[in-house]
Amino acid sequence: MRASLIINPTSGRGAGRKLGPAIAGHLATLGIAVQPYYSRTAADVGLQVKQALATSAEVIIIAGGDGTVHAAVNGWMQADGDSPLAIIPIGTGNDFMKMFSCGGNWRVACDRIAQANTRRVDIGRCNDFYFANSLGVGFDAQVAMEANRMQWLSGNLVYGLALAKILIFQHQLPDVYIRYDGKSMHTSITLISVSNGRSEGGSFLLAPDAEINDGLFDVVIARGLSRLGILKLIPRVMRGTHIGHPAVNILKTRKLLIESDMGLPVHADGEICYLDAHSLKIEILPQALIIIA
Image 1 (cartoon, rainbow, N blue to C red):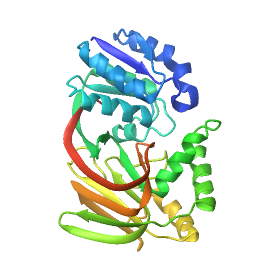
Image 2 (cartoon, one colour):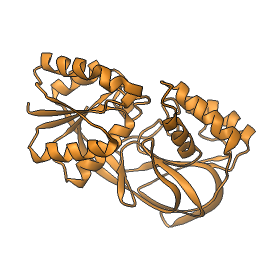
Image 3 (cartoon, helix red, strand yellow):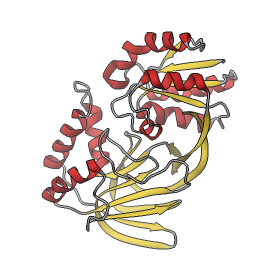
Image 4 (cartoon, one colour):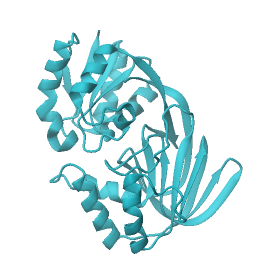
C-alpha cells in the first residue's frame, strides 16, 4: 500500500507531536510503510493532501482532530480526490470519527486502515468551502471560537469552560431568515447546527439521528433562549433528548439558505469560518468523499 501520513502536531493540545512516531510504527507493523509529514498550519494539511494526490498515493492517512479533518477534506475536494482518506483520531473532540465507532482510539483506526475497507460518505458545502461533520451558527460557533483560544486545557473541559464564558459575557440572540424546500422561517436563534454527523464539541449530541450517507442534513434550530433556558437545555443536548423541546426545531433537507442583517459567527468542524456572515448558502454533496472506515 502506497500511503502518505500527514500529522497535525498541535492536534489534541500537542498529542500529534507526541504520538506521531508511535502511529508510524504501529502502521509499519500492519504492513503500511509511511514517511510521516508534519503540518505547520491547517492550511498546510490541505496543501499536503493535494500533493499526496498528485503523487498517486493509494491512501492518504490523516492524524488529527476535527479541524484537521476539515482541512484535509477541503484539500481533497478541491483537488477532485480519488484516493481514499483514512483518519486517525488524536484531537480533542474527534466528533466525525464517532460516526465510525472509533472515537479517539488511534490504534483501532490504524487496524481498520490495514483492512482497507472503503465507503462513500456525504460532505457539506457552504458558500466556497466544505465541511465533514457540522456547521454551526451562533452560540456553538462562539463556544468553538473561545475553545480554540484555550490551548492550556485539554479534553471536554475545554468546551465546558468556553460555554460558560460565552453564556456569561456574550449572550446574543440574532434574527435570521432560513429558507429550505420552498419554505421559510424568520426567528431569533440561540444556535443553528447543520449536521452531517451526530455530535460536536466532544460531548454535545446535537443531531442524534443524523447519518453520513443519507443525502440529508439534520438541521437543529434552537430559537432564542434566555441564559437560564440555555442552561436547562444543555444537559438534554448532551444526552440527545432535546428533540421535542418546544424551543427546538429539527428539519431534514439537502439545501438551505441562512441570512441575517446582523453578522453571524460561523464554525465548520470546529474551525471558525466567519465572524460576521450575512448569507450562508449550504448544500449536501451525497457520497462525495471516499474514506477508509
